[in-house]
Length: 133
Figure 1 (cartoon, rainbow, N blue to C red):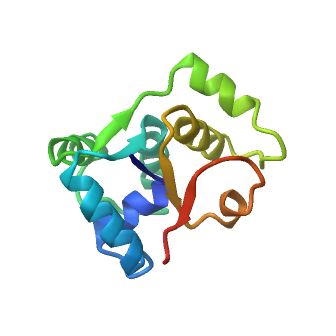
Figure 2: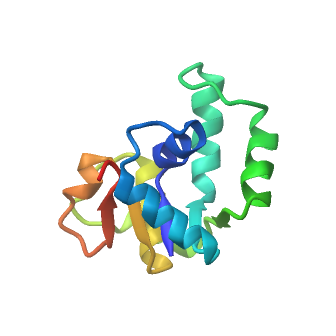
């Protein structure tokens, strides 16, 4: 399974050229198998970014989420065990959303697709791939 970081979902939504060709190919292949997901926290993060005017979504966030889920994107819940795993990440930066997303990837043995250098360089055992490749 591939877990998309929030910015990767936004890049995919906009067909942003920051999303590299290898990442696009991996998403396309996994999509056909129903193996592309986001943490539920990514929808929360996108909603906050939209409310603060940092991004513009093509429709209300509730509809945007519904459309992605209807298209086959899997949403992985943030439960208590995952939240606590996020709190236990050693040598990880403080951003709570990044902690929850990383914990979700670890809990589901998913490959995290991200361009976040702090996550890519983290020394933990996370399976991850650079989204710009």
